[in-house]
Figure 1: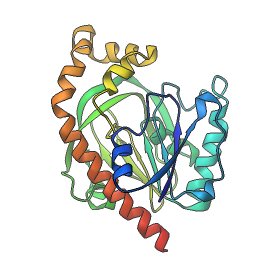
Figure 2: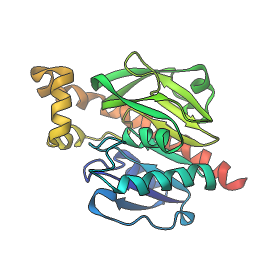
Figure 3: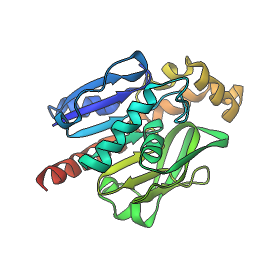
Figure 4: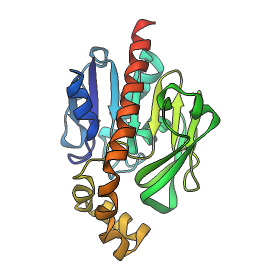
Length: 242
């Protein structure tokens, strides 16, 4: 299996998914869009994984590569019909590239929160074997406000109605961060935009304690990520067989 990864920031990488891919012999190619990397031919890959980043989906003037990225995502999902996994910004990009909408939230959602599977989510292959309520790590200030055509909400909470979605048969987006690893909080705290949203959401004292709160939960986050990755692998195998 070959995975194409779109990154928008060096420290927002696939995290624990890289460990799982290594174990299964999966090859992946990383495209650092913010560093000017070109998008390779899409036909060479089985999965497109699009990660998070501090920019917003509408900031094309500041980040002109967003135009080409959205076009690639749209072609991948609508024309090639291949499996997709978008995390945080990648979730939002899936929505807007395929005709949905996003908007800034009144308050960023940062830290530990729970998300609940919808009825569709509880039946979906991506969440097979996971509980209907999942503890998740969040760090975002934008949400999906309108699903694209063919979109189905798979998870929600009180902060965002679309915490996960499927577009078409096997393009998935999750607003939360299942890929979190031990270095994530420290790495992201060094990004000015992330630090600002962290303090705005939690306050200075709780923001400073976030890493300590997250650390004991890392094994549970890894279990969730592993289950999602295995389920996604089954989706990819099914897509290749059709």
